[in-house]
Length: 205
Image 1 (cartoon, rainbow, N blue to C red):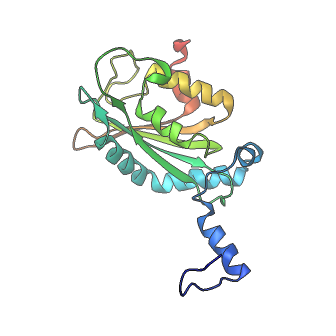
Image 2 (tube, rainbow, N blue to C red; image 1 turned 90 degrees about the vertical axis):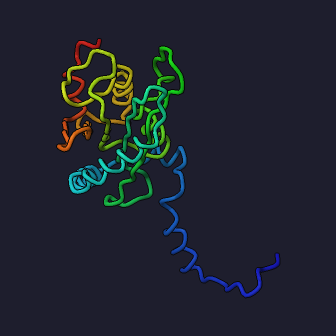
């Protein structure tokens, strides 16, 4: 096989270093994902990083919201922190997305492309578990009955999705759900565990 002109030959150690450098950009295999065990160190470290970087995640979600598509201008952005195989405990991975709906009409379940569903779909197949999910909107209600006054809560379809992910182990009861409203000068934030959110909406089922 011919080489590019002037291309240097790498030692085994250099090649291994390159592999390590790009490993975090590689999608884990199904086997790696299934066999990976999230230790308490992984979880505690990721939570600590979320606490440290929550404001940055809020801003990232807000930028994703600005790129969202809604025929009626109802825009939500989300960011999520997940733990992936092949990475050290202090390397949780972040995912981002906004909602999209191009035309009127009722949409339910997986066809309803809320920001929360889109960001978790982006993490699915990569992350073993979601540590935290941040959603940002200037809205206060979805049109569905919600138990919030100043901040948009996840809609029932998203709450049902959370229950499914909880049963699968993709989310945990102590995964953090952070909902933010940045419509006014004062940013309003509600943060609770997934368990607390689902307990609040226990009458869903």
